[in-house]
Image (cartoon, rainbow, N blue to C red; front, side, top):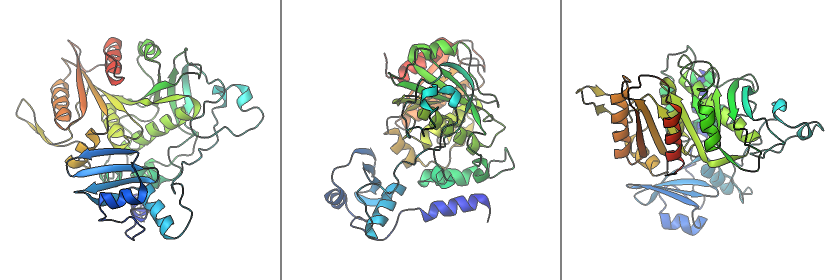
Length: 387
């Protein structure tokens, strides 16, 4: 069996259970609330509503249960079998042991103690430029974890058509922890007492890094920058996304992070990956800085009367409108002399029409080049909600 088919088959086996376990497909919202209690969050888009509970999430259509997410489906199945179900079946996985020992104070590791899992600030991590941050902690320990939910399964199927590299998405994900790396910049003011934001940036070239003048912007905004290596335009789209996710996961393990200020970023070809990250993993990312590229979510006709297809066809319009209500903020930045400028302008209009909080930032006379530091800082201030 081909690797991608194995991944998708495993995802299908983890799909929502159809058997009744006090809550079932077709139940009314009132029945669900009577059984599970008040939700912890909700998103409404037309006839669709998504309610989040401690056990997982449920999507309703026209007031009836239409879909369970993986966590809820597994919790219901455990309950049906009579197994303990006081906590979700998919409790957070303990990450693998860290091997970025050079980033930590000796006291944190010298005694051989296993680091505390899940987002605990460890010792005194390094600040400034770290050229080689080893990606030692993956977002999911198994491949299927990256493809849960309808949108991500559709993404995997669509990504199978990516011919950038002669490799299927499943193979694109396979690497031993510690064999991949990212460029890291941490503002010198970081001490661990205050949570900092993160920008996970995907570049169009294989090398990680950032424009040197962005260091002052990161210092001002109290923002950590991480950029994975080997995630350029010549890499498979799934690998680019997953390296970015694992870079973020490693940073979250090492540093104290403000979960409300995690952003995806990208320049040119990397900007498309930033858009995919924000839309496919909205539980992680609160926004994105899309630089020097337009991203069409639906077919569109531009001012020159040319028609352009959706660039993310695995996301249907109802899903996009549901995502628009999740609070994502999207900043598009482009120079007025950039050949992509017309597409950036049209993308801003389209994303706003779909309900996303979107803003365009123009740089006069700039061609297809990196965003100046001042404009990048302006975009970050807007993402942060600052005036």
